[in-house]
Image (tube, rainbow over all chains, first blue to last red; front, side, top):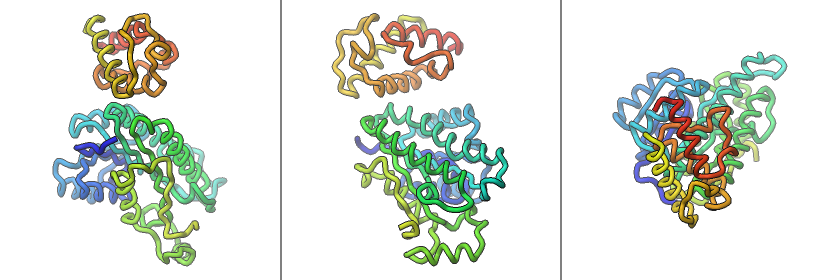
Length: 245
Length: 90
């Protein structure tokens, strides 16, 4: 299994937060980055401008299967076959389970879980042809340890780790590696609803004494995609400053 | 594309996938079973289908009514793809 000459990566949800940071990091490593999100953002627009011809973006809702399929066809036309996938699209409505709307629960399962599974299915087909591929699923520490107020969300994230383990067994002989990265609490829009008191508590419980950043996580994603990680598959690697130790 | 051309493509891809997976093939015949006679694993069959989708632009098994278990022989594969291509108007 050798690294591809032209590294084409699909990053789901690359318009903001962690997805955007991963896209930036991989561009600086020489990847051709294909990403999609429901809407564009000024940050994404400037990234596209700064790396003309090396970023491909389309407005796609991950729940729209035919559009997702067409997106991947377009990526192949623009950049060539996909060799790398980062499943980072996700939504995280917070609240006690009994107070959540069933439509919110369904939407979260559709985006976080079904979306990642279907996108993996589509990308793996391209990876199989090349006999090489690397997938990183962005899960979460809430998929590993229990936390109040994120019941349904944590279920989708734990499920992603299951996907990681099973796919790694299924696809290993095809030269395809699959790993999960499980961030702790990071400074992104997703944790914007945490109160200062909650943030202070998390920091107090974290051995490394701060909240995570998107850079902490994208560094690990970069490593797992690279040849330096060529013997690592089926793992969930936690990036949380020691919070869950 | 007529059925003879389709068969040539399918046999070519079978040979390529077998080579990549280090499977030694017997001389190909319509009646040979892909798993039992050619020695394909389920993963090699999956690879064959992915490769054929790239070339032919269709995956017949996404159709609810076409089951992967229905194809046993090379002839079955050819028929399933011919029907799918006809349906898609290619």
